[in-house]
Image (cartoon, rainbow, N blue to C red; front, side, top):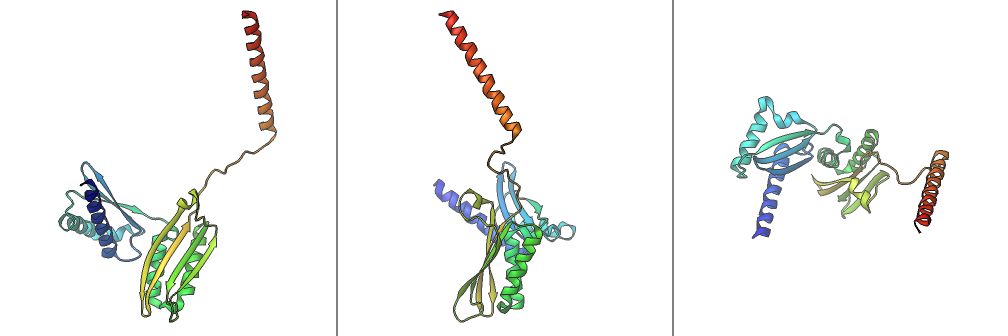
Length: 225
């Protein structure tokens, strides 16, 4: 019974997320998270354009709240908006913007669109990035194209630092799959030890102090014997 309940909740959450993304369109929403609290459901929307979500005189956010209550049976939904300052470092927004550009200008310009997106990532400070386009671009057979720069860890614990997103663009030739990976600028402490005179002197003093303590303990033991 518990498993069915969790599966049902997961489906409902996915339905809410997909609805909100469709409601505001590509390039407007990065992610939607749902948290359950004692006072109701908290719907967290991350977006580069909070004004679009809120709407004039809060009309959009009020309408969305009513839809969540009626259509998705949420008892007391609270919508929280988190603004994205640098959209060029958000994988979902970059993927959505690539999709919009392909739908607008056609797949013939896919290389220029991809290289422009990579250049914007670099200027924003990304340490590495990769764009993968799959589909007829442009050819009779489906093909995969990769565009990348910098450092991008795909294995180990560091892969968790890579922001990843997928979407699709509808072109006259068919559907184009889009995958974007971005390693954002992150300051991390490097592993290792810097050996200098101060460290060496500290080790000597520590070793000397340890030897003195050991000699005192030995003398005390001999006296007690």
